[in-house]
Amino acid sequence: MADLKKERTLVIIKPDGVQRSLIGEIIRRIERTGLKFVAFKFLVATEDQCWEHYHKEEAWFLEKGNRITQDRKNQNLPIEKEPLEYGKDIIQSNVDLFTSGPVLAMVVEGNGAVGITKKLIGATEPTTSDVGTIRGDYTLDSYELSSIDNRAVRNLVHCSDSTEEAGREIKIWFDDKDIIKYRLVADQILYDVNLDGILE
Image (cartoon, rainbow, N blue to C red; front, side, top):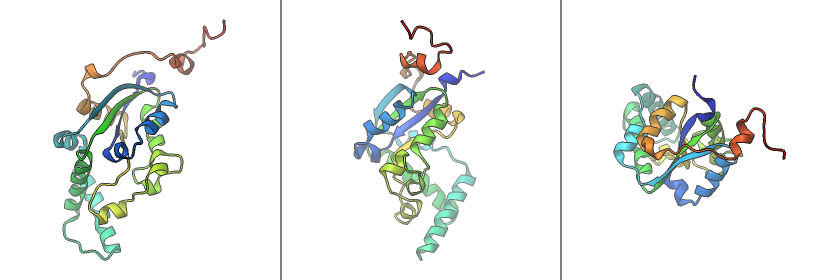
């Protein structure tokens, strides 16, 4: 059985988050939950890394492409491609965004790391993200606007959708030697069953 306290997720502050000077705020919000950072890497991503990262099936391309086609119809814009091609353009536009400037990749560890991080960051589309989430509070982009402009949604941060995805994604951005195993003093208050040793 997996150690729940050691669950890991990948978080990447995208170039728009870096350029808007939100690194500290995003780290602060994650850190204040009690989750622990076990790896950081500031880098400019390669196209190959990004295509491997955005590992999508044809059904995903088709679903997203149909949404773009509908958005274009709603805006009385011409439909110039098949939905599948519009769907593939989403990944290319994400690759273009990811490689446009530096990103900060992080591995976050702790009980519920994937779910807690997703909750903090908010829904993929900023305009539908809840108030109090990173995307809901710090950006205003939408699927509709980004599809009309033929670009990626600028939603500041990537986080893994599941523990399985986290395991796959972390290997793209980090080697095992990059991940540091250590204990925080706060781990005792979060995880120690009896809280022995707090009182003198």
